[in-house]
Amino acid sequence: ELHLLKSPDIANAVSNLQGKGSNRVEKVKYDEKEKKIYINPGQYFEGIEANIWQYQIGGYQVCDKWLKDRKGKVLSLNDIKHYCMIVSSLTKTIKIQKSIDDFYAGVEKDIIEIELKNNSKQ
Image (tube, rainbow, N blue to C red; front, side):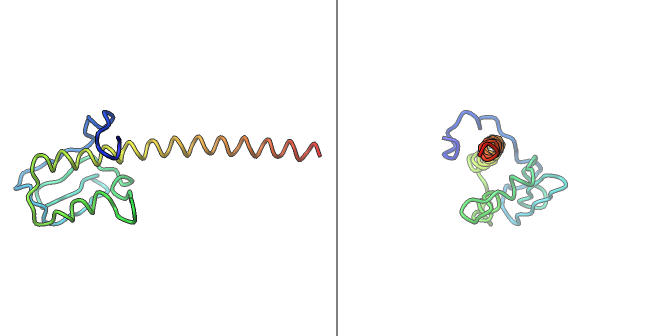
């Protein structure tokens, strides 16, 4: 559900389109310091952490590719909502991956301790 953008966990957008302009995707540019993805000189998606901007699936940077596929086009309100849901989905995905990584690190540590104890008994 999360990657199909149907999860209730992504109902609250973590990003919004800000600024004034035509909603036309002219040039996609990420500003890491400001945490913004510009789509033209006057408009940007705010609150984009670097790890979300850099997140890749199948060798593609998700946030960058989606916008570049729409270069020259005007984003509709549905497009904007969809993109914000993608950002929210990636944010949640990264949190889930971190919790899995943290859990795995704990399990790995426990296994090593058990193996060390078993080896010391031999």
